[in-house]
Length: 106
Ligand code: SF4
Ligand code: F3S
Image (tube, rainbow, N blue to C red; front, side):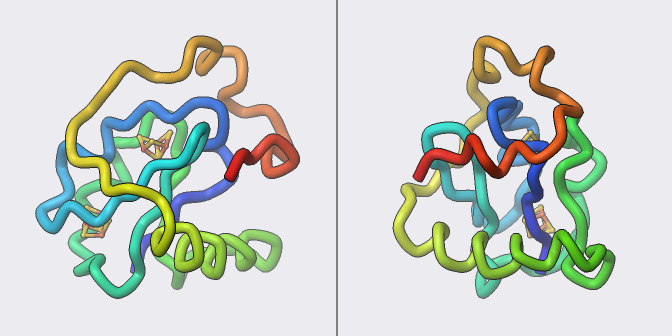
């Protein structure tokens, strides 16, 4: 499956949801996740994210591994999102900030 990573947090551009053929994105207050059992590995979303926050689980570095479990866990509790919306207000300022996981709201 593909996985949403740290840099989505506090940006949430949502371009990704527009291209997903199986609508497997789920939305929290300041982050999106992909449901691992629903993702068909089409790879369409990866280049759509302006923040570069989506990768295949096969491509993750060691410190990105925690996002595999986080996507799976939160996709079970957050609502589905299928249409693009405005990014969060300070998205441009937060793009590229390190350790945004500290700011994740569940
Ligand atoms: Fe959806 Fe394809 Fe991205 Fe999986 S890889 S989340 S199926 S767009
Ligand atoms: Fe997040 Fe990128 Fe989608 S910032 S909402 S993964 S387009």
